[in-house]
Length: 176
Image: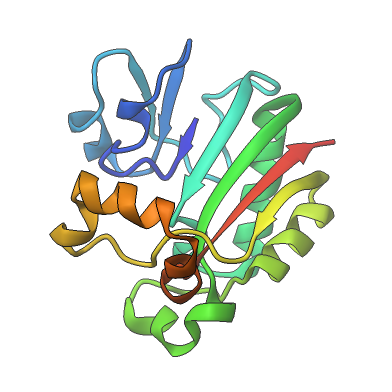
């Protein structure tokens, strides 16, 4: 399940038995490939998704757009509800701990989240963090240069570049 699927860039490019694109925007269906089930539910009430039916949920650059921390916690609880036992929540998220003021360069970022605050929220909502990388991947993909396959391969081979460029956090939480 892709939480906040938007243009379906992630869910369209993975292989799995069933694909669910969750987004409140009714236009999401226009971007979903054949075989992707689009669910236009709210993240705090995914009534169209059966509890315990999802193996993996992925949320990329989504949680900072929620209106407040209460909604963030409710969202984590609802994702937990739809996950199977030992299901995983994969989080790729701008990390305010390393971005500082640049975190607020986007007008639609509402809540500040760091790797530490996300881990705390996971514990509060019955997840066990199994992987936490405070620095993972560059913050923006606006540059076409950064998206060139050759440069991406080179970047991944140069760990020293990661420290100066990586501004997002990568966290995997497992449902208890």
